[in-house]
Image (cartoon, rainbow over all chains, first blue to last red; front, top):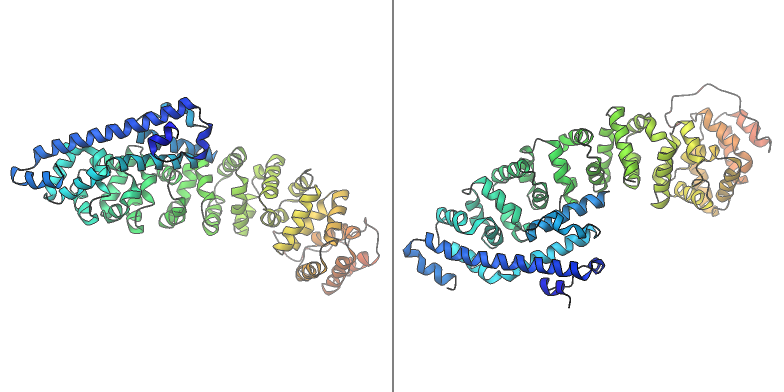
Length: 67
Length: 445
């Protein structure tokens, strides 16, 4: 399995065989970085959002979020 | 050319998704637009799948909160990227109520990061006026790519309202060009029918003929014809520019059906533009017809070309090839365009004309019989003398059944002069006596 296939979880389009290994690796790195950034941002957003929720609702929301 | 522009649009979308610049992905410029689109969807799926569980829980939790608080948290904590990620997981009716309270610029930011495929129900539920305001905002930010991704998911009425908020025809053309799901272009044109002329003028003013040619290639025949007819109402400089663009972009395979579908007055007008009659242009058109099985469309056009241009057309080496002559004759049979074939064959130089006549003679008997019946319906007293003269010109090259059929028709039409020449059996130089033209006929027949 190529770097790119590992990153997306699916074989890239056939035409991507024309790209050289460095370009495959670059794309794979970009995909993994974007996924990591999104995941980190989601975690921060959830923490931040709880600060805006009134105390009365915070418990049910935390339970709903599985926290 | 169209492929190049589509590829550029795809790289822009992918760069946005990966949060890098277009320059960072310059090495993808040799990958096709279709492959780039497929890869972008793979990346989108990966990004959404990574946090699917948490995103679903966020969407569920939001139901516990009053809408004003949800709107506040969306802006202060989640930001546009995460709102975009959760947008497709919220109930459409609730999402629509939320959207009505979110500032338009923030909705615009969300739109640039959303995957419309995952939020189709939500997009369809958002009030038309909100969509229209977001659309106007996106256009002001030159976010044509985002607009192009959303249009396919808008209900027709929402689309109509949204288009009223985009008065700039050049902007509309840009959106149409990057539209995802171009099978909706006909519907887009239906909703914006009064904008077609504006689109043509915008293409001329902003040198956006590539976008217009792409639009044309994706329309149904009726809309192509309407666009062609409206284009034909423009001044020579506009038509010159269109023809020049078609020539540069080798777009004749797409344009030939448009010209063929034009009304007779529009076609007559187009053929008055000198640029379309130049040898290089005729060569590309004939090449397009040959490579794309388009002689059925080109034959009727060739029949009404000015004689000098038709002579230039048949003088092209391509047109004189046996396989191309066969394709022309096959097209005449298939489209019942024998009347259009006559002037073309008549203009051929002697050698290819003889080969064309021989090819006609080799047609299966039932085909030839049917063709002769078709030909007989136009060989009447109304036929232009120039067409009778053309038949006389090629009489020695025609198979006997065809010549006999022409004699019968000429008798019925009262063209004794033609009967006399054709019955004489030889005398290629002999021509029928000049007679007054019975009526003006732009087809030349």
